[in-house]
Length: 189
Length: 374
Image (tube, rainbow over all chains, first blue to last red):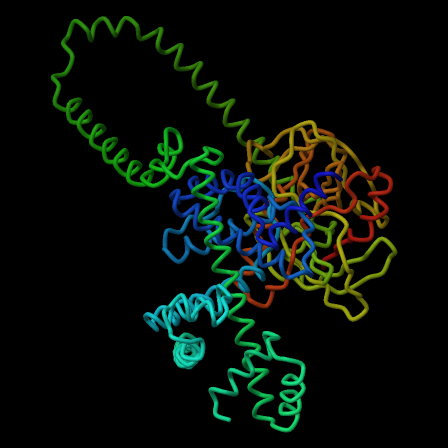
């Protein structure tokens, strides 16, 4: 019962991206995944990649609110990693017929599909923002990602007043929307 | 107002930076102008997307930092492969190359030794004479070898007979069990292999028509689906299907239909391999009868560890079961071949774990069916 509560607390922490919770889950599960990947044709870098993807899947799940983990965090992470790695192997044509199991797994196909969709969207957003160049990129990041006020931004970027910064930001935003939606269309074709 | 001003207003509105008066005014504007209203909705969505993107980016960098921190503190195995891990990794990577090299080396060695043999001068006369004295001796040895070989032949024939006898008694009918509440059952392929019509009966005596979805003759596994309007899908299956091998001496039990009523019998796992060391199956010490084949073998936690398939005809109380992990293999093969079965989900967790056997059986028996084929 105690361990169940512990896991619940960990998940709640993870949903807030609380450093300590992230660290605990990381510490308790990474080695298992590293040996899974290395024993099945992968490198340590692959292990890090796959494990972090699985952490993001768990994070998204934990934040969704409706999520109730009906197995141990360990089992969940293992299942996601195993599935992701099989997919990766297939993509690389480094096909290994059967990943040797070292623990039990649960079906996670739906979550992984969702996760991949999200990843594609976010990566497109990332690319779109990158392609704007400076100062647009920093300006938008400061306002939308770091949530700074226009006043702070004007001072930080050296605009004479907040209104000028706002005009500039408006232009950048329009460009971002345009680039993003054209990427979006190309990406979906 | 131009677009810029509207957007600015929208943003301040969403962020809650408007004064009450301004807010009231803006809300009126929203009501009267559908364009502005649309813009608010659209921009809210965009901002939400941006917010999630921001959090996603932040979480990624948290993960990155955590990884570096933990490996610096030595709390996780460091990114550089050391010692055994490195060896394992290299071995996994290059084992195919190593195998090919070994084969080439082997072939070369053999052909060289054959050549050497061929080219060496034959033995001289003195040695031949010596050998001839030994001939009576050799003859005796030979005749005893011939006897032994005959014995072996007989044994082989015996075993062949045994194998032939084995699956015949089970042909008439058997047992099957649900692996998905939508009506998917698993049973032995040899039960339904030649059948054109299949029917299954539950422990209450209700009979349903079923169709063969796919059979795996090499594994002796068949997947059936109940195809009958009378059948109502069952919500959840009380037992899970184990993916791991069980331990020798583990107590087990089975439910099956050696006669028209469901019959319980119990025993233990006696070996991890089956008849003549077959790794597909495992050996059980259990009293099994005709009709038990295809039945589920449970461990004390109520997990399916195998499918009862054959028994040794010459020894009482020895039976063999196909290991449960091959159910997973069969189902994934099925999914690969036919996309119509993507929604087939095997039960992983056993909900009867921790109950005593009597209660477990009570929960499980509704999911075990009598399988008949014509």
